[in-house]
Structures are given as C-alpha cells and as structure tokens.
Amino acid sequence: MNFYRDPCSAIPTRYYVLVENVNSYSAEYGGTLPNTQVEVSVLIDSVNAILPKYDHYYQAFDIGSVGVGTFQGDTDNYSCATRDATDPDQSYPYCTKTLWYKFTTNITGTVRYRVNINGTSFYDNYRVQLFRQSIAGDSTINGLKLRGYTTVYDPATNSYWAETCVSAGTYYLFLTGCNQLSEYVYPEIKLTEAMGDFCVRALPAAINGPGSATATVLVDCHTIGTDYGEFGPQLTCPQGANTIDYKTSWFRMDIGGTDTLDVTTFLVENTNASSSDIKYRLMTGDCGAMQ
Picture 1: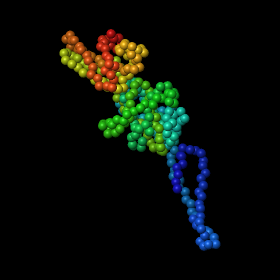
Picture 2: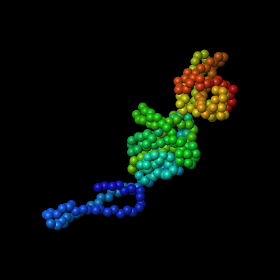
Picture 3: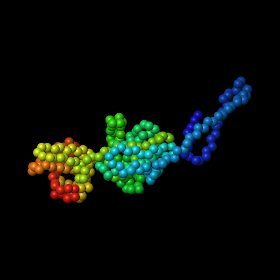
C-alpha cells in the first residue's frame, strides 16, 4: 500500500495501521485462534517542497516587451502551485496548480506559443491558455479575454505550436497545471510581424522606371483605427461603412529615377471577403499628412 502526502502542507497528520489476524478460522472446530506474529514496516520517502515563483496573477513572470523573435519564460515548478478563485478558467476541477507568465508587444502579427514540461513540449488548451488583457489588474474573465488558436507545424524545429493573432497590448500565458505533480515547466513564444498593418510599416514597392512592381501582404491579423482615415466610427472609403467592420493594409510606392511616369494600381485578392467589400484609394504625402 502506498499513498502520496502533499509536501506543501504543513499540517501535522496522524495515520493508523490496522492489522487483522491472518487466521480467520480456528485450526480445529471448537479450537481457538492461534497466536500470529506480526511485523509492520513503514517507509517514508522525503520530497523537497519546491515553492512556486509565479503562482498568482500578480506574480506573473514578465517575459518583457517583445518584438519579432523567439522568447522563453523562466523555469518554475508545479509542486506547491495553487489555484485562485479568481483565475479565469475553472472548467477543470483537477487543474489545481496554475502558474502565470506575461508579455507585451507593439507589433501586429502572429504569436506561436507552447510549454515545455520536463523536456516535452505541449501547446494544447488543456495545459496552456493565452489571454489578452482588457482591464489591467483584473485576472477574471472580465479583465482577460481568452484567445483561440490553430495548430501549426514548424519545420525549423520539427515541432507543433499553438498560433493566434496578436496586436499591440499585454498578454498572459496561463499554465493550467492539469494533473501535474512536481514537474518543471517554462513557456516559449515566437512572434512574427504581419507587415502592412500600419502606415509607418507599409509594405514598400520600389519603382525606379517603367515596368511593374508587386507587393504582397497577409491580411489575417491586420487591424484598423490607428492611421489617417481610420479614426472615426464611419469610413469615407467605403462611404459610410462602420470602421469596426473593416481592417486596413498599407502599401507604399517608392518612385525613383528621373522619368515622369503614369502609375496604374490594381489589387489581386485571395480572401474570404466579397470583392465588393474591398476598396482602395491612392494618396500622396506621408503618414503625418495625406491627400
């Protein structure tokens, strides 16, 4: 018989060993039960109580203000981690050892994330969840919004990650601790920028003389509301459209040389939007003033 005693509990507990006579019947009818010698041994294995460093929301390890690249959080241990009543995910009652990490970014693009538990990587929602901060200092579902994800394969590392869109803001990695005991763990994130979301990060197309130039963007994670023509609740292109229903992508044509050129622009799109919903306009100037 064996059982596990939580090494993080400082409450003294008394245990009893009940031994029953192995001779449950008399040796002879009418006889008496013989005496039986009994020996009891107890083996106690010691376990070091490893206190967690990032057990609570306010203790979240700050991976930092990050841009494009791969980043890793500090290593922690599940041994004595706990779960707070205000933690955002209470759907699994056996996920009782939660840990917290966070990062801030100023880019628009994608983030890939996963956790490494005792040398094995996991990316599923059961073990790690990504939340975007909506109210600072609030660790409940009111202040943190869960991000969905897709599973992607990374041939460079021959491994799988969870991937989702990010834009400027603060994000929390919530390690659920489901069915964990005393494992070591750390998170990994990999950010990639989606060029063209902002005027200052417009995708360039260099034109140095007669000919053509092509610039291609991935619009999946693009946003709206930070640049010229995007500030109001309604747009002027398309006329009267609700800003919240659209996203914008920016291109910049850099025209060099000494020739005077007639420039014709056109779009080729491969999205799930109707072609009638995709509009563009050609402006001159810079990100501070356009016409």
